Amino acid sequence: MKHERRSAAAEHGDTDTGHPTGTGGGEIPDRESMVFRARRARARVAFDLGEHLVVVGCGPVAARLVDDLLPLVRKGLLHLTVLGAEPHPAYNRVLVGEYAVGRVTREALTVADVQTWREAGVTVHLGTEVVGIDRTRRLVKVRHDADAPDTDPPDADAPGTDAHGGVDHDVSWDRLVLVTGARPVRPNMRGLDPSPDGAALPSGVVTLRDLDDAEAVRTVVGAGGHVVVLGGGVLGVEAALAAAETAGTATLVHTGDEPMERMLPASTAQLLGDRLKAAGVHCVSARAVGVSTDANGGFAALEVASRAPLTGDLLVISCGVQARTALAEGAGLRTQHGIVVDHELQADAEGRVYAMGDCAEVLCRDPGCQPCTARSRGAAAPGQTGTIAPGWRQAEYLSARIAAELTALQTQNQGAVPVEPMPAHAPAVLRLKAKDIDLTVLDSGRPAPDRATRHMEFTDTALRQDLQVTLHQDGSLRYAVVLGRPRALAHLTAVLESGEPMRGDLTYLLSLDSTWAAPVQEGMGESSVVCRCAGVTRGTLESAVEDGAVTVESVTAATRACTGCGTCRPEIEALLAQRRRDRSPGDGARPVPVS
Image (cartoon, rainbow, N blue to C red; front, side, top):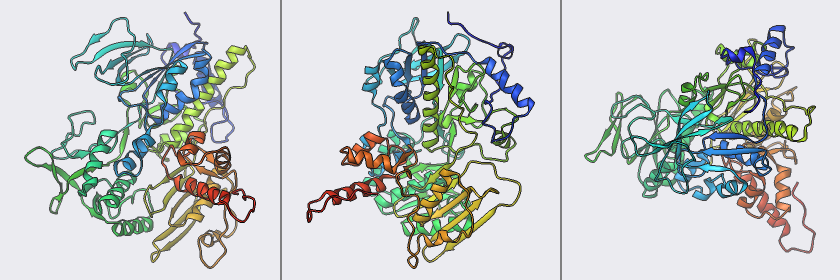
């Protein structure tokens, strides 16, 4: 039996979460915070060599964690099992809409090499749903789909067949990582079961969340059919634009005056609405009340209040996502908007259960952590979901922490420096994936101060461009919305990532994209980040090209760039094109490296 260290608080089931000194927004911790953190540290169970880590979920965030843990598995320091509910290896859900309209191939979606995992010693079970967690005995109950391809049922002492024809097993674990992601929200209206895991949607109604949904969209837009999209958020706008680009037209149904008005300033939202109309998207501001079907039970029209039904060949529901928390709730873990974790991604006091990605919500109870305190009282947003970069950062952190602890045990280095907890807040970049519409929202992630902040606004209705910048009291970037001004966006993104303050006259931002002033190439050096999802710099991309990468796919394989939202692909293609021009036969001049 493995030795366990437990505190009195852990024996009494205390599941409060916190983080060590240094992650409370730079404040000097008071005595209450220090006592809180000491109690949490005593409750944690130390790692042992050869522990069994079970990952629940096989999406892109789980894939990044497994990739980073492979060296430990190959050395025998860690046993690793991956349980994926879908029969497919991990694929990029962010690009499912791109695949649905033919912008990317099916192969481009795949982000996991399961064969390499298995050769390294990882046990992978696809088509295997986890239906329960026993934290006392450290077991997960799984239901294996016997018809799922390329997978074997997990080993078990006493399997049994459930009422649905699946096979139930118990799988033991020493550490558990929940990466269950998020599920689409179904609106409550006539003709539609609002239960997320309830009855199947009517034929011709999809949420564009998985590969089956994408195939349905491909069939309709490929035949020039009309798509109706319900939901005026970023995903709904992207779906409508993609459908209109392929089929020539689409209808977007949203509440409020303009699409995306909840996350954009009024001027930006209005300009975006104008651009959508120009792109062939018919925007309808109305409240959806029902779905009508034809004689065969397929989608016929979306019923809306105070106007005629909106007919179409396919309905895409894009009303947001909700973290999958049912497993955690059943196991007695704390949940709110998601599975609550501290800044070390721990969901329990012992440090045996972790959560990350869209299913997790960083919300510690340390009274000295200002960002989490602000989120607790509703003064700050709970965190961004639906983007891949934050989950990848979490996967990289957790793998580094596990590696540090196991390596210290292997080398008997008792003085090894532990990996610092994740920061209390992290900047977020939300970019609309659309052809000819360059819209990005930058957010520092820091709580908004009570005092007034500095703000600059520029709107050009003729060019349909908008620039909104808000600074913190210290001059650092708090929030920015950029529509159609790419050089200003590059500069502001570099400012956000550096955390450096902005001083002086901010109107110089306007000159960056002007035709009357010499444009300044800001943030385009080797250290500038091109792929913000994977954190890949321009210098890393240039090194990959120098080493022989000649296609976007080969650059991706070497650097992980363009495996997230895909918005960095044009920059990578431009870099490759420039390199080809530099190497083409000419007047004998030596090729000039790309700077």
